[in-house]
Amino acid sequence: MHREHDHHTHPAGATGGVGHNQPAPRTVQWQRPHVVGGEAQLDEAPTCEPDLDLVEAAFSEGFAIARDPTSFLRLAQVPFEALSGDGERLVLLRVEIDAVADVGGVTPHLGGGSFRYDPLPAQMVSNRRRLRFVYFDGHSPRALKLSEVRALKAAAAP
Image (cartoon, rainbow, N blue to C red; front, side):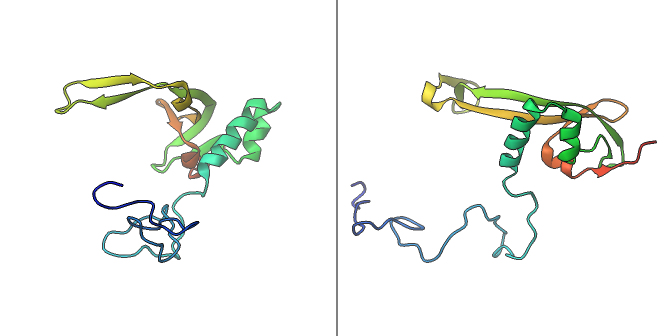
């Protein structure tokens, strides 16, 4: 109990709902985008592919063990040559899959002039893979995420 109320006042088997210890009035989808000044339209098309993080993880796992990486890219519909949104011709140079482990955290001190560093205990270390597609635009390399690659328009070879 804290601040003169108790979190354990629900009947046996009941759980709290939306708000502070209130029963849920309806099912809530927390991932639904919020719209300023009103409810989001339910019939709007999603702006990104659902579960793209899972698609990226599956791509990374499969690409790492593929005997024929070129065919794997074709199967995944990754364009070797494409046009960017700004009309630049892009050609695929490489696929990068990095292993990333977060082993520490920083907290800024009040005023922002310094920070506190804390190493994370083993059970809090997060491991993930980062997937990037590196295209060349004629001037410099561009690292794109899978969602950006899927938005490219395939270009015909010159």
